[in-house]
Length: 94
Length: 181
Image (cartoon, rainbow over all chains, first blue to last red; front, side, top):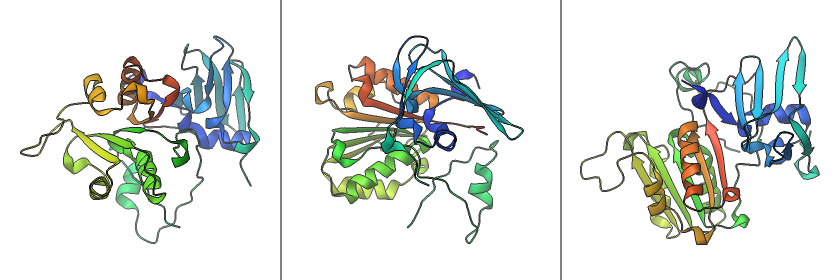
């Protein structure tokens, strides 16, 4: 198994993102801080490992965000995201 | 309500052997969802619709096929489904029934490992030539949904774009071991 086989996409972390953001995130749009490409989060390339996930820009491959979880906490590194657009219609209902 | 789970057993998997082998009628599962609006097709989005499935990747595409049938939609739809053998095809009876009953739905199989005697269909992995034969002409601007193992999904999506299809009308969902916390 190499990197290709371990690569998934934003759909694989839909549940995690919904839990963290309170929106259905795969339909939401984000801008890459590296190349400026605009994509829905469902299209992001995602690498998941034991401690968390890394999401990358499908256009330039740069890291967009990292999410890790442990010891009762979530860590979000969002430096690769220039912006995120959240549509009220995608807000998760309680 | 009735929810159907399609499980692919990964021999070294953490969850699938339990779901496919240990679960018994009456056992309870906790489910979260439905979640995920990106890899979704609704009849009012129109088409024509191209669905490309690799193995268990047919699961979300089957939901679209069923939704389309339930809505009585006549949006033209073509499903290209890659499986190792005919015995590995999931939802086979239902697909054959829907295909036979609906002129605007076509189901095509690509059997990659073994084919039944007298098989006149595809007997190889999905490639650009096959996609060109099966898919809609680019001028029809189909909505394409591709789901299955990462390698298949990325190869098919790349081939569709290379054939001239609009990348913004090609959606992908990669299946694989997740290890997501």
